[in-house]
Length: 156
Image 1: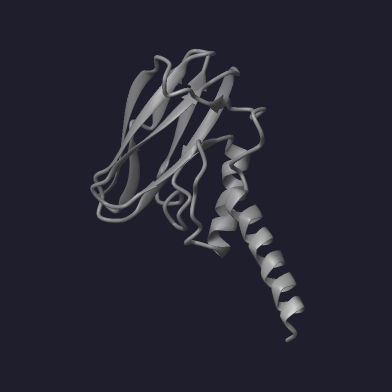
Image 2: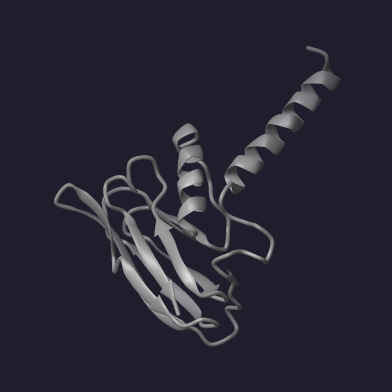
């Protein structure tokens, strides 16, 4: 393969991989489920624990009530023995992204609404919920959502 064709092929592969890694995550600042929060502004802290239990994978809690316009800092802890992630979004968006994750299970996330954690690690997401509705948070690592690792955010 000639060098210029190799460079073009690598560029195309890089662009398509970036698009897949972003599937279901960033949509500018006009997302149905809100916008990235400002860590310098006050936020209500919501603790979320991820773990395996009795053959299931769970988020504790798996339902969160939030007021429209509220900024929330999700303090996330992986108490499990496996890697887990949390992706905040619409149910439709998360299901579409889950299908992409089936094809690319090691997909890295560097999005303000998603965090992947190794066992016994912690992280946080700061998010401002600007619209009323019912939204989803899920672990989209293949097999995890299907094992129960999903939750609902109700914004009133």
